[in-house]
Image 1 (cartoon, rainbow, N blue to C red):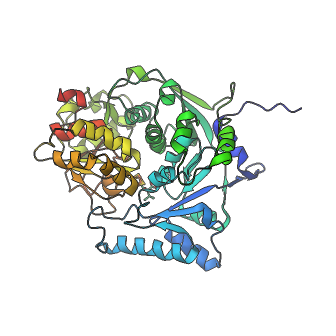
Image 2 (cartoon, rainbow, N blue to C red):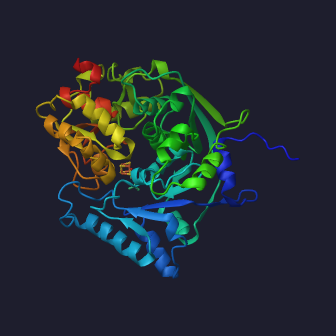
Length: 471
Ligand SMILES: CC(C)[C@H](C(=O)O)[C@@H](O)C(=O)O
Ligand code: SF4
């Protein structure tokens, strides 16, 4: 009888997919279960295949969508921007030529790549999931090993359905206790990044665990795993449980009947064993968390909403002090200003971080019977056409429109400046997306990352706010 050593969830998934173990410094060869594709990082990969005369090895495990370059109004018209139009047209041609299923603009299943995978039930526990996109970590919420890859790796996966890779180190992020009302998954992950820093997760796969994580819905878990990458990590994971199974059951690509029962049996074993060791561990107390917002130009430069813009002079570490000075100058913020007094021009509710139905419900709940402040524009952009449809079936579109917000079609939208939805130079946003780099939402735009609840309350008051400020 062999006794197996206790293993982490990440190790289990990795080992189950190792086609060939690398010797010495060699990488392992991993089998890939699901390959998601979008228009930005796939053109050269398909070109490479064409040049080599190779087909796509497993078109049935490959699925494409149009998300980054698509406009979110007038989607029946040709895309005005020539670069975006070429990008989207190229994806269409490539998918046709190589037999890859594509959900184009206007299609009922179109949406942000990380929203549609889970929604279709394609993302499942224990899988390896890749995409030429850093926020592929989102899918780890299902207990999958999901990570972003570069364009040459996209070509490798298209051609072989495998990927040579060195194992990641493992880090446990233990979040215990209970989140207070008004505190969301977004606040948890912003607090995690503020704690470990934007480089703190480098080389690691993060496993989020603890009672506060177990209590979260799948959508909230996706928000957390989504931003693992902003802590520098390769991936984020959460062990699958009843919440996961309930979310997946009955989805178009989820197993059915006896296959479903067998799958759930297998998925239940996808937990970190008692006694397994992580390379690093971090602890966070859920009870102490409050709504979190960023004040700077990286996702680690964040603070509880109740605090003030920090004073760089008080930051001991020289690099951090310099980074803070530079960030405050770009953000046009004065040290000591209460964050609640920071005035915004735009509120963006959407993205693969917070563009799912629960996020829209949470924001609509705050906006119900209220108005977006004068001089503030609010964009509500569902993460997928299905999310849009579900929201409309519940009347959420009405709530947003009555409040004075714009109700858009699905796409990445203002999360990044690759489509018409952008900030003007000097404009300031409260945004439910995941990145606040200089120019991320448009040249010269200033971004504060927030939760959907904070986004909605901020839209009403015109300054960074939480729903509590509305009473
Ligand atoms: C365009 C794409 C390669 C990029 C990513 O990899 O994350 C985008 O999705 C982003 O969020 O910046
Ligand atoms: S919504 Fe934003 S973070 Fe997500 S894939 Fe699109 S651009 Fe990247």
